[in-house]
Length: 402
Image 1 (spheres, rainbow, N blue to C red):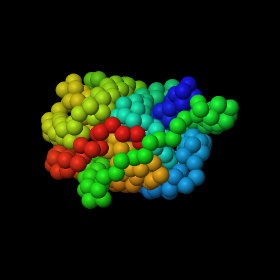
Image 2: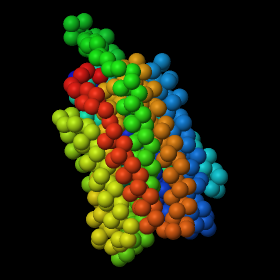
Image 3: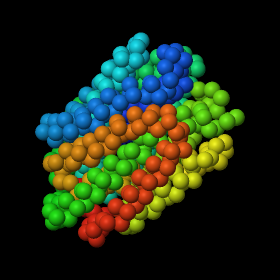
């Protein structure tokens, strides 16, 4: 049991690093490279697009390999891959070199979601809280990307913001390999009667219901990916523009972003608890409706009011994350679960990749007010789609071994 808990901790830290490393460039571009490389924010943002494309497209390959080879082995590759790629990014001297390094980061970062989440839910009866705890680590990675990057930029230059997480990830990869070796030796040494029992057979649902529920999952996933990427990527710039008098340095921008993201991380624990005990459709609809309302309110705000409402919409944006993961984990059978998560995250990250140039385009022409109008409309569409979930979706929240 202790070994399993340590393995779960590695998976959680991996989720933290996955999001942190993917968002370092967002803060670096917003507060430093516009000066160092003489490019505007709108001109720099597109160089992150290939990385997010790789982040999405690579999930299918990672899920397929994990289901056929080893999920644990793929997580080890993840740690070493993003570590080395992040260090390479710290040596970039031109926007093109940075784009190549970000693409490499995205390719290795793509491993985590289809593989890591499959390991999180593997053998568990109730999956809401484990996924929520894991999601909190991911959200804290988002939060610390702005905080850590801002601090390192002010203290040691923007290159250190890539070097430090890279070295940490390489060290974690070594520790994870040691953990896997210890787990295998422990299992082999244990008496047969004390070894983990195989999971009971899984219940089945109709193909038609499966198709309908997955169609809604993928539709809401696409719009949720647009919302999540737009808010997390743009928040440092939003705060730099709108928190007049509150954010006047890279560190202060990062600190306020960290506060908002850290508060929002709690939402996953709340939602994880609720979906284990109540109707997923009701919880999902409430989250989507609150998103639409708060984005609409945010369009004209600045100062303290903008900070408060930003904390509110990030809370419900992060709260949506575990819901689709719970549905996928409970509907997909173990032997193809990594591929099911891969499809879910291909949709998410493909949309996230398109969101990056959208942010630059919308901001360059109309500012962030128009972006919030677009996000409010997307959240409203999610709300309508969730209402169409069939009653069979109640099955997905029934207690069952996954």
